[in-house]
Amino acid sequence: MLAAAIFDLDGTLIDSLQDLADSMNEALAALAFPEHGLDAYRYFIGDGVHTLIARALPAEAREDAPTVQRATELYRAAYGANWSRATAPYAGIMELLDELRSAGVPLAVLSNKPQHFTALCVEHFFPQQPFTVVLGQRDHVPRKPDPAGAWEISSTLQLPPEQIAFIGDTSTDIRTGLAAGMKTVGVTWGFRPGQELQEAGADTIVHYPGDISPLFGK
Image (tube, rainbow, N blue to C red):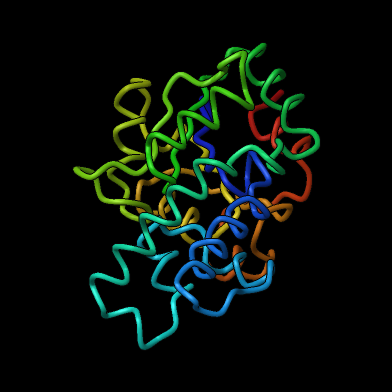
């Protein structure tokens, strides 16, 4: 029986695609580099800021350390201004979290978004703070798909990994959960298609937030 849930943030709990894309495009424009369409960011996002920068920059600029550093600074500043403009929880997420919390299911967040912005988004969009643990990308911890963060949450919750569902919208999330020994749940309302989740080996794929509660017998 599953006893706890770890959620990815962007593309799983919140639809942040527009704000993330706008912020990166602002940084690219400031550097006189080509911008990208919204759909391109579905595949740029999910593996941390440094990977986002590398994917968004022109190929010839990716190995130039000063350019990468400047792009990172510009992106962080832009996202600091844009992070809540268009972002909102997906339909049905608030109801799901309320249902799981009322049933006594411990909840956590593990994101590759920097820790500061992860905490900021969770505090703003989920003011009832239903999460026992909220972890973003931190310098001393490998980012997903490394299972270190998932295992840290498992230890904090004092539950074995096999009793925890790892829920996310990308292959990175599925690989994280599998590496951690958790049940993996792929969601199709996020940034990536269901085929990616299936090919990554997701134990379960769901299409609506309401499909998650039955996995906990709720």
